[in-house]
Length: 374
Ligand code: PLP
Image 1: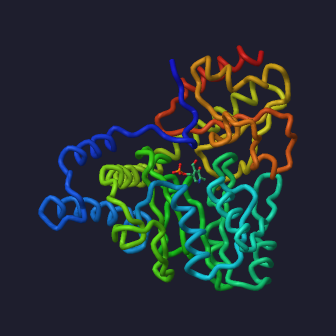
Image 2 (image 1 turned 30 degrees about the vertical axis):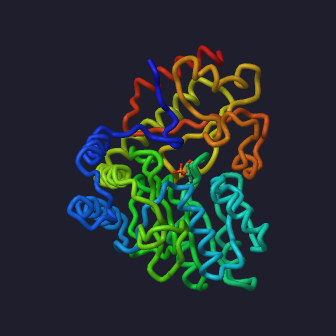
């Protein structure tokens, strides 16, 4: 038996999505930029997908641009805001995903003022501190704060931060990669300049994502070349990927409440079972709703057995992650857990779920963990 509890790293492709993609790969081979009938068919396929995505997130069609994924979308938001919208200051946090953290570092090296607001021991935002920061300081400002943290699941209140930014007249970018498809979005009612989506986080294909760019922000091409994506991102479109993304997002939005209820049930069952069978375990991040319900980050007291827990779980047939998948395999510890100021010696495992997981899988996990840690 192989059990997959690493859905914050990536999710398996759903069958409906792979069927839709296969149909496109087989039947829609034209280049969307060609003006003949085959090209027009491909163009219509891409535009149909764009319309679907825009409708699902409450955006207008001209505000959705397809990209290669969350990393590209977040790079685009920060770099284009600095290059084209005269941003000279970025207010962010120390717990952002590396694609925001490292992009901000690069911009800082080029002279942009980057300020990182500290978070508390649960990874929560200090809204009063943020408000004070936004209202002081010179230069055109971009606030960049992730909607939900991929390692611990703590969220920001998107509306609240959006309102602060709107009132102060500053730009707001949010890395919404972990929440797209898992929480409802209505961008017509939320002040956001940019946000991002990645299909493989909601049972779509890897290497396909999108960026929402609010109509008020006119930016120049991120990738130069042809005039694809309304001249914003050149390169022949990944039509099957785009259709896969739109299909996956449509399914995720349609089934959101059922999936959420199922996943929340699994999450609390696992939390209860862990507390019942093991001593001195702690849960990282916010545990009061709203939090990213797909993630349960658990820390274990330091011991020779817990040290190799992740490896032993893998051998036992269970895929999970240590903190974040992006740092697993690398020696570097998690920058997120470090920012929370916890005890670095404790061993953290991130379990993350999808609607495909079952209670039987959690029983299997607990049985294996008892064997490993017992
Ligand atoms: N932002 C967050 C919060 C993520 O969890 C991830 C994926 O791990 C990304 C950005 C990057 O997305 P992608 O894998 O599509 O580049």
